[in-house]
Length: 416
Ligand SMILES: Nc1nc2c(ncn2[C@@H]2O[C@H](COP(=O)(O)OP(=O)(O)OP(=O)(O)O)[C@@H](O)[C@H]2O)c(=O)[nH]1
Image 1 (cartoon, rainbow, N blue to C red):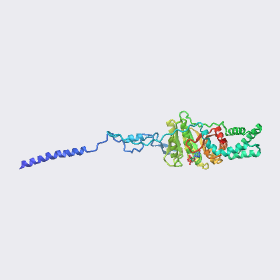
Image 2: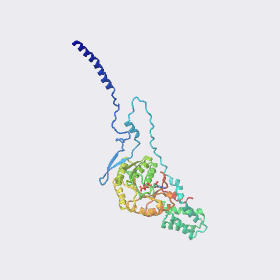
Image 3: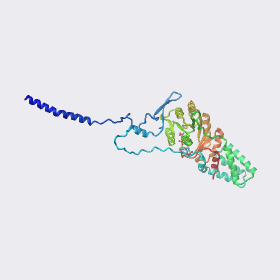
Image 4: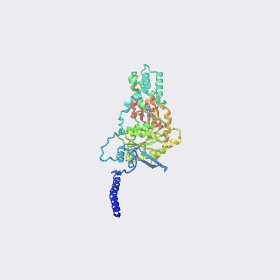
């Protein structure tokens, strides 16, 4: 009996042990395999690659304040990120996914001859001026009344009192001395006198060449809404069209959308923007960081946008001086461009004087000349500030900014 029980126990063990071993093996074999290439981090594919130059950096300004600064992505890192975080599955048929196309980098229009190409913009708004003037000067007898009307037309075009009197005196003398009534001859005289008064002798080139490996630094200043950010974007395109390497600095930290607007302009032509995500950050710090970046990358130019400010706000005007001083700890500011809205006419002149006292203006950008017949403002601005108009804005389009060329400008003013 006892032997029978032992046999039964042996049989049960003999049956159960293999079953249990089988079960354990089955459970073990059913466990998920580890991936062959382990994930190095648990970040999403959308996160920024910590190894790339796109994360926040910090800088300290002259007062010791620390500011995080974001660099716009250097390239389109999407491909690398997707590759990092989604290792290709082994032994699976490759899945071809439609990648969103990276925004194409634009090629800006050539710079040479832009004013001539855009002349119709100027001509349209000046038609009344030029037609009226030429009609007057073509009349049978040019008497005192006609000369008064010529004077008035020039004043209406914002040429300013002194330049107007000068121009009319010279023309009057020539018409009398040469005794001509031929409309073509009078027109040629008017053209010559206008060219003289707009002053072809001024150096209107932008300082955009690095010195001893240090980028040329340009600052753009002006009152609110004159077109500063747009102009910085357009200048970046001009420089890119001339094969120059550029970095933008979004030191307009006052208007929330300004940095984004600038970065968009830059991205269109493959230019990076140094900006701060901190609202109301110190603009001098952003400008400092932009120049530092330009020096590190050995760019040709660093182009700094500043916030619009009213000329009667002394603290804001002082801020401009501070931005310039802070930047100049690293590189001289070779170009301070004052942007003036041509449609504001004589108002621009009073602004210009105050800005010139705060920072050393080296050139004027006259915007919105497509929307006014007051192109004559170029002359009093240059005279009162003693600095040349270097660029003119002739529209909202990306390449509607032209280097100022005296002859092409006068021809556009006089075209019918
Ligand atoms: N018609 C025309 N519009 C222009 C020209 N330049 C700029 N603008 C327009 O002027 C408006 C203001 O331009 P912004 O560049 O934002 O002006 P801003 O000076 O940076 O403005 P704030 O930062 O607020 O001081 C925009 O609608 C531009 O498209 C131009 O030459 N012609």
